Image (cartoon, rainbow, N blue to C red; front, side, top):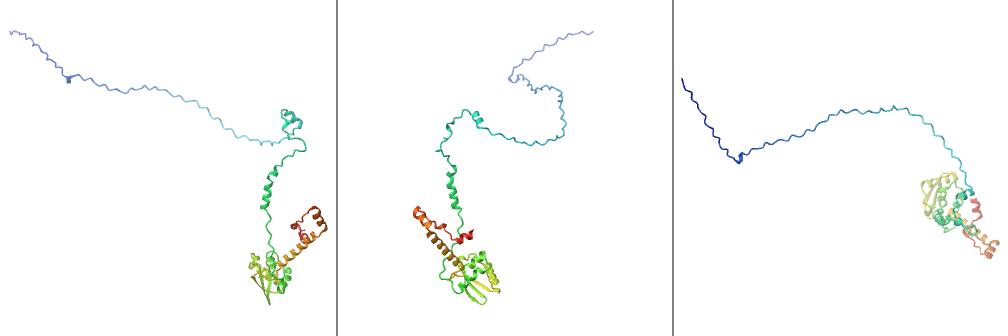
Length: 269
């Protein structure tokens, strides 16, 4: 029989641990997770809404009553004095006769005078110059014929400043003053020719030249007669005994621009 042999284990020698710098234990890095906020679940309640009112139909608006203003009675002097007891009467104007209330309009009266100067009447047509010679022959016949012609207005004014220069059968020649020819045209010549045809009862051929007449025209004759009547009227005024006494005793002055012949006043009336 075999003999059992007991074998003792050999002791294990632990190796010495060398501490090296690169063998330091490494701490594990912990990743920070974002904090999750707790969510509070709340069940929202629906607010109670006020129901909209039902629209009502438009009401009929009655017409506004007419406003009748009642008359306001004017206060009497006694009521005014009673309502204003503290007013000093020293500011009132004196009641004597020497007090004169100033006229405010008189301060602006010069404006009316200035306006009247600018609003003067338009200047009348100047009187024609006296003729160099009195009318004789054909010129005198024209003076006698002119008032009988059926013309007026511009045509009459043109004919009044003409004189008859030549008559050869039914051909007539007139001279018209150029100073009064501004309104002369073919229409005025035709109207004057028609007036001559109507007066003579036959057709005439009229020619008009713009040449200053040497003898008196109807316009110059009328101006001369007006000047003669004006001179006679002034002589009559200065020869009146009453006017002479007023001039001698009171120093009166006769304004010649106010003297008009009686015929002119009768025509104006």
